[in-house]
Amino acid sequence: MRKGRANRAGLAVLGLLLVVTGGLVLARGLGAFPQDWAPASEPLVDQPVIDFFARFSPWIWWAFAVLAVLVALTGLRWLVEQGGTEAAKDISVGGGPDGQTTVVSQAVASAASAELSALSLVRTANATLAQDKELFRLRLRVAADDRVPISVLRHELTTVTVPHLQEALGADRLPTVARVDLERAVPQKRVLQ
Image (cartoon, rainbow, N blue to C red):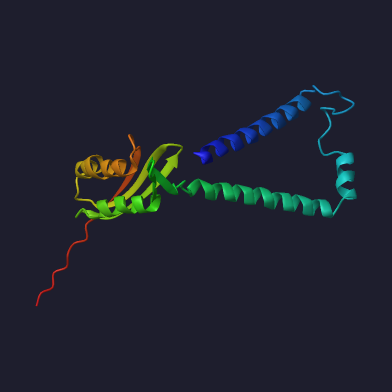
């Protein structure tokens, strides 16, 4: 869950920066600063500010443009990261004096997908296995025929698929999130000859 921690830290820093900036602007507007330094009755963009921008023009506008592009790219990267999953890599499922057993998480997830896809009313199934320290998490996306009762899928998940994965991983618990999309059954076409 490194992504969640990084999100919280980044949002906390951004929030703190905005609170401090808002507090400084409010303090200036209320006249809390010395009036010879930051008079509340004068606008922020006064003659010294205009002179500063005129003195460093045009390159200061290029600097602002570069800064804006960097902020936009950082925001875009953050958005892209939100959609990604933290898939586990190689998983150590056992060890002893003779060695250690390691499996590839994608192979375990593919086995879960295949097991669900084998059901007659399941059209497609996709599984992703994530790992947070010692705890594994399973995310399933299942497209099923809309005629299948959800209880049948739930029974399959809780009694077959998830227990098989728990056994393969040697895990006591396997928190699972399943997204089920029900798709309308396509009527079969009859051909008259």
